[in-house]
Image 1 (cartoon, rainbow, N blue to C red):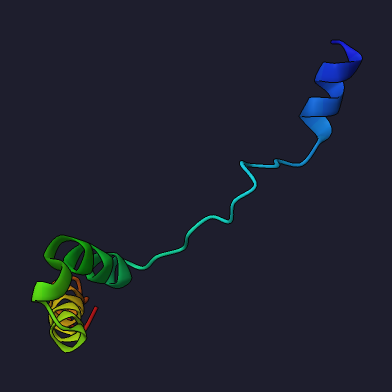
Image 2: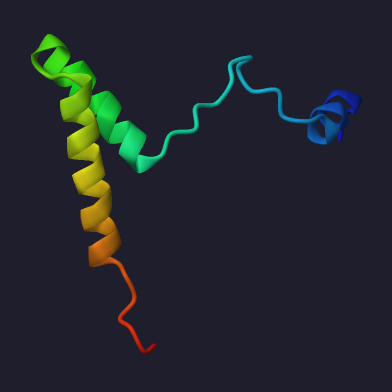
Length: 67
């Protein structure tokens, strides 16, 4: 191995200089709705849709009681 390769292997990952985006599935849905529908949907409507979506997922993937 060369000195440059050793240096690269031990150096921490620098990335592209931009912060990674951390988005929950609920927030991702809100972003998609706002981008796609632009001015045709209100923040209140987005919140309602995302809340219903989240509640539905929780109910679908909830563990059955007694397990």
